[in-house]
Image (cartoon, rainbow, N blue to C red; front, side, top):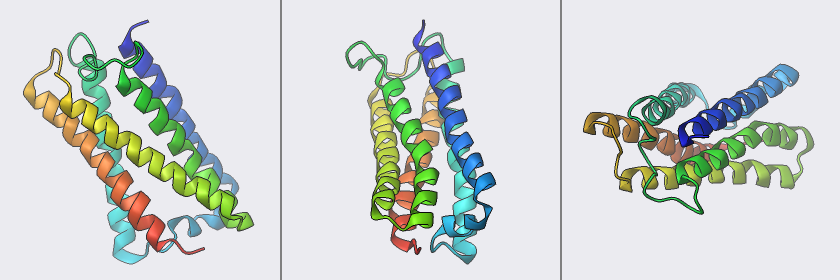
Length: 179
């Protein structure tokens, strides 16, 4: 199975897991929807919302370049880890940790148990750090079979989702969160 197919499958199943966990939590705990924002209020909430869409678009641009531009995956081919493309490994980590965030936060809101808060914050930091490493790997990779414009568009998209997850989610949201 090609690396592109593996990455596509990881993104399909991982994306369904992330969005499914969010949908499940929002559908089953509608009374906690406002609490999920923590201390994010007013125009800052609007900024976060717009940034979420930009981050998703950025990640999709990165995936598009890897999956549909060029004959092989554009990034990570020159830095295999135990025979695996590090972009695929980091994508599994990123999507797995993203899947844990909202369910662990709901569990914390409902129970007040600090273990759920620790899991929630840890999932945000693992998400942010895996994206940071993925951005570094992509930036340092020789881009195979793509134009410079495609390379920079993919890197810009990946850098933006990294910014969102690291600064807005793992730092600002965590700092402002109020139970």
